[in-house]
Length: 146
Image 1 (cartoon, rainbow, N blue to C red):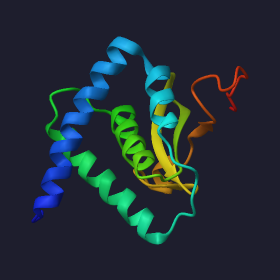
Image 2 (image 1 turned 90 degrees about the vertical axis):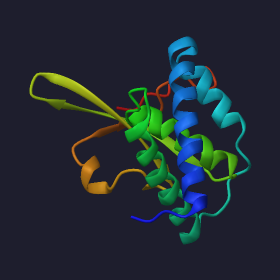
Image 3 (image 1 turned 180 degrees about the horizontal axis):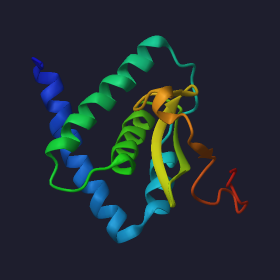
Image 4 (image 1 turned 180 degrees about the vertical axis):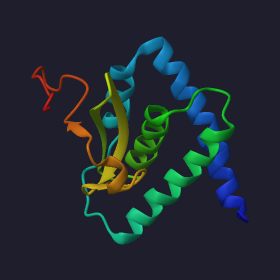
């Protein structure tokens, strides 16, 4: 795959942001990161096909950076970076969390949706996952919907 300079720059930024997110998760936890990301959001706007293409491009570049990143950049790291990038673009992305049972273990996954469309996962890979509304309290009300 031949990448343009702009793509290489995105990968470098993603690599840096993945490390930053990893450090912030270790020191602050998830809530402060989500609060900051979601407070930077511009008012919601209509989402076009071009916005979805941009979000998927970002997701692919973040995934490439995750493969060469020295931290264990799993779905939460990748999704937080993508959510941050989209919100900074003024796009109404939504960070989603879900759980499922695999044999005797309870497993969890994070992904990002834009206009209800998963942009860093496909719908098939999310089948069987029970989504939750939010991993934190919003406006002092419980936001868990299992």
